[in-house]
Image 1 (cartoon, rainbow, N blue to C red):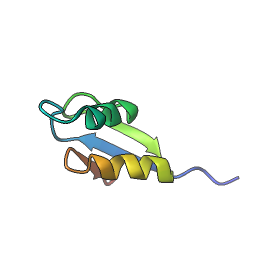
Image 2 (image 1 turned 90 degrees about the vertical axis):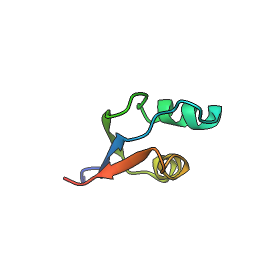
Image 3 (image 1 turned 30 degrees about the vertical axis):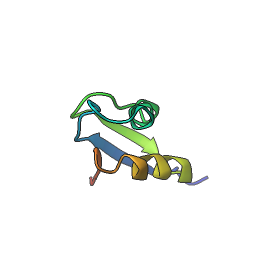
Amino acid sequence: MAAKKTLKVRQTGSPIRRPQDQRQTLIGLGLNKVGRVRELEDTPAVRGMISKVSHMVEIVED
């Protein structure tokens, strides 16, 4: 069985003065403080969450 693809995501922006749904999306991604990095499974759901808060996160290349 092939290994699942993953993405490394880093939070670059603060959730202060952002809509509640964007704050909840960051929490759902496992991010909540600037500079945190998470390795997440590459699924359509995760891609959608990243695109919703794309102005506050970046995908880190290895």
